[in-house]
Image 1 (spheres, rainbow, N blue to C red):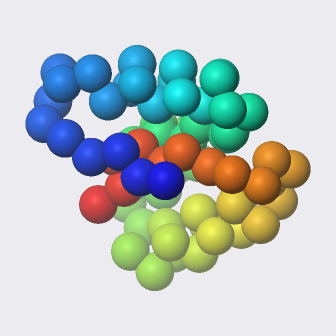
Image 2: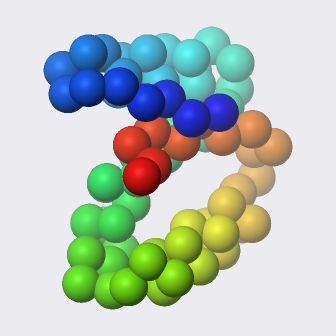
Image 3: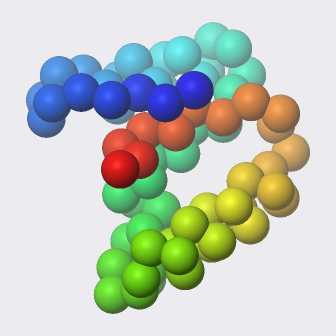
Length: 68
């Protein structure tokens, strides 16, 4: 599931609450890029890192926020 919308529209709160209530993993894409120091990398490298992260996820469902 992807949650998209303008800044300050409540995406994060909705994603966090939805993930908590449905036993989903919440991943904020912007935070993922910062945490993994991928801000200077090309799109393919970032996408492959995200795919690797998703493949290692234990929970079968994911809420992905702020994905371009």
